Image 1 (cartoon, helix red, strand yellow):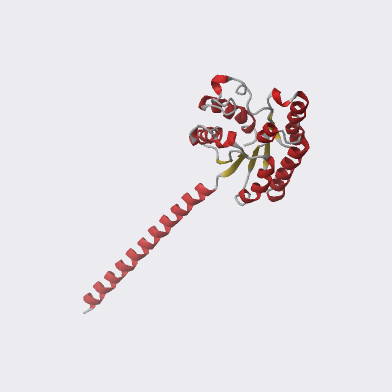
Image 2 (image 1 turned 60 degrees about the vertical axis):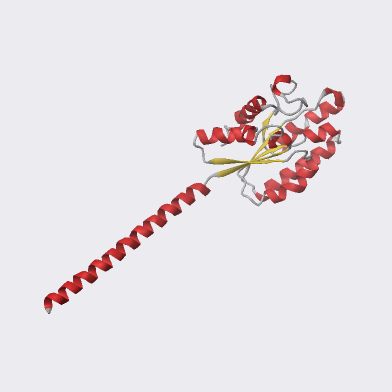
Length: 224
């Protein structure tokens, strides 16, 4: 009888140990899964907010400069992810209305690429400046610790020399005023080069986007 009780006791203990071991393994598995999720969500966000130049009009999404920068960041194993918030045809006024919705997602670095469509439409410089400042103010109010980047833009000479010169200075002046890092000219080495632009002469080809990505990366790499 004693032996039977002893065997039963040993059997019960073995079951309890097995259950405990299973629970421990489950807990370890849950911890590992939680760690994976944490690692995936620990990346900081770089929001590139712009028009068709950012959206990559006429090229594949992976060929647009934000995607190229994202691939560069991944290759360097930096804890950042790039969010392409480009919208073709976007003006500074439309951007001012759209930015609040995008700020629902945490922003660690904000890259502002807007104004080109204003320039092509001949919108008064004062209005473009006011709209861009409003966008900047909204970002700063929501994420005061976010690092800010301004991309400079120029308009074609046919817009008139006075308008062109007034338009050009919007970007460095706003960058200085708001303590933003400046990309002097987004389309440097691309604008006006036929083989690096599509047939419209405005939007970069895939090769052009590679150069644009490098223009932005030269500034971005120093703040991430």
